[in-house]
View (spheres, helix red, strand yellow):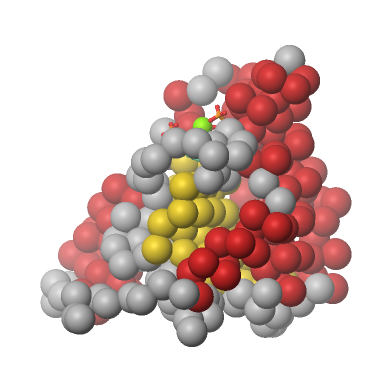
Length: 225
Ligand code: IPE
Ligand code: IPE
Ligand code: MG
């Protein structure tokens, strides 16, 4: 039986959930935070070592200004209110993505959350923020060129935001949509993909456990037989 080390999640469906249940997309985003907390706890319980959450994509800047502002405020208050609890629970925060596009105050918060939790090892919580795979690969190529490294698989892996993190065995996308939306295209090349009908705020520990159990029974070939 396979035990997954790394689960990556595209947390989709907040907006639709919010419109349906609260007449507001933003209240859907707020409800999504509760699911984030549940899935972090459940990951620890299930001995997952890396949990990567797609929280803001390089394409999400196309959204209305007010929604972007709401998302950034949510991120800021999540860090402010939860950092001590995360730290006490042995969670190490790692950011992937180009956070230089975020307001200075949030950048400082993000970097200090990483620093504060750097010695923890119960769960690595990887937050994908202003993350896009195409941007990550372009950035990697620029690094390789600047450092005059040889072009091979190893130099690419070393130059990605995810260097040091094993590839996800599992990708979950909630929200009843079957696409990758520019998420971890290199890293997901051999992942098992689970598309969930439920919107992110409705996704729960039971749904998560079901996926983890299903994964354990999958025969993974990696091109072999
Ligand atoms: C995903 O939910 C959360 C973020 C992109 C931050 P959406 O906001 O995309 O929700 P839907 O897909 O519009 O319902
Ligand atoms: C993917 O969801 C990004 C995040 C969950 C952060 P989107 O809702 O932005 O994806 P598309 O635009 O529907 O593909
Ligand atoms: Mg969406």
